[in-house]
Length: 240
Length: 240
DNA sequence: GCACAAGATTGGCATAGACCAATCATGTTG
DNA sequence: CAACATGATTGGTCTATGCCAATCTTGTGC
Image 1 (tube, rainbow over the protein chains, first blue to last red):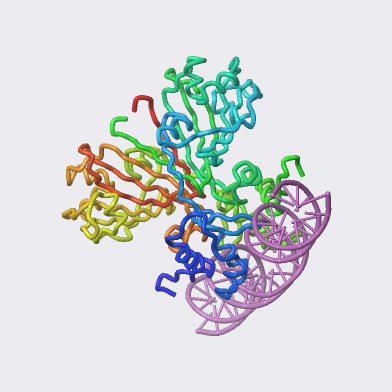
Image 2 (image 1 turned 90 degrees about the vertical axis):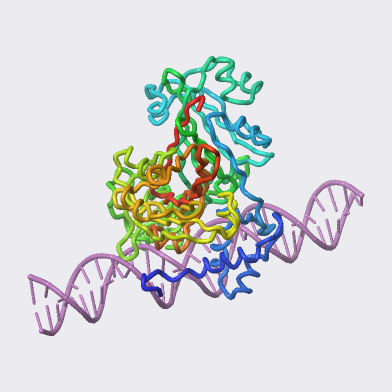
């Protein structure tokens, strides 16, 4: 106990650092000992082992698959977050973006969406819900809400791939500025299903409000990125 | 079981949503039933209750204090993240910033710091470690590394308060551009002690590399923000 | 009335164990 | 040899319980 009366370090945290030592220098994909083996090796309960490993999984250092085992995870993908869309951002970095359509329809806006898009509750909005992938790996669940109906939106999007390109080319909607809000959240059952991550794993949730040159809101998007696989980079220049 | 063969929703998650219903509309600070009472009310184990509540604490919906109880948490602080420093950013929003000095010294750079600042390992760097507070509440742990020694740095900083103002006014170091990397991490014992948060709580970790007009790195900073209390906003304009 | 001690309450951590779900390896059958 | 079944292994969730630490309330002594 220090003069600071600092709490004792929990046992699981000590084990976490032990496991970090175990995996140092190992190649991604390398299996580590099972939970039961580690519990025996370190004379601790399996629950304690699970807690240590869960944190390493959450931090993207380990992955684990039920029935298969626990393994060293690959490094995080760094994703440049700019004015451009997810697809454009990824391509800029030589990463292969892809997306899987979950829903594309026109719905009545709820209070939240209406508030952000400057609409009345119940006004129609175009909803685009996708899973975003990089190099074939699902990394984000994204739902965009766009004011009103957009004729032939589905076919235009399939052709161009990038939302922002479609908005500009087919609907003369040009993004002039973007406000991104970034926060953490924890994965629920839908995230588990859609992104293949663990219950309770940390997410980076980005809400984006995009406006045109006249200041009118043209996009409200919620993106939930895997916190274990992503880090964002944003760049700002003076005078910008 | 859906056609998708989705896993069953864990019991603790169902309880989490129940508790969310319980706290709807309650004022921040309002105590909720104890873990033991909730376990009895919902016919479940205390461990399951703890898991549900832990997630709500991590997401900033509840707070809890050992010996006192569990309560509705206040809303997250939204922090605009721009080219300017933490202090300037907060003041812009009418929030009272403060900081508590942990360490200010000249150290030999390790491999990581040297790499980012374009130095050789072992070169001297000025290290500034602080706790950042808003409205008296510790919200971030920040360590800045600056190349070389800065004469009278401590007194200059005490006078001006803001790192960037000091760099400009006293050392003619002007930030021309900034690259921020944002990712999630989990709180360890040091974070628990420094920020008053729970073990394993999600953090928003921001690494910042700042450069002068000539492109030389002038600051490498690591900031760990409480994920339960913070969300970031960044704004980007076209052409920026 | 104030200061301190003791007890009650509430959260923090860990153990032992049970049972189920997902994956993989091995064995059997056509 | 390929397809399917079975069994083993490994992770996922939950229960019951114990014990400790931190906070708060109440009681006691001065």
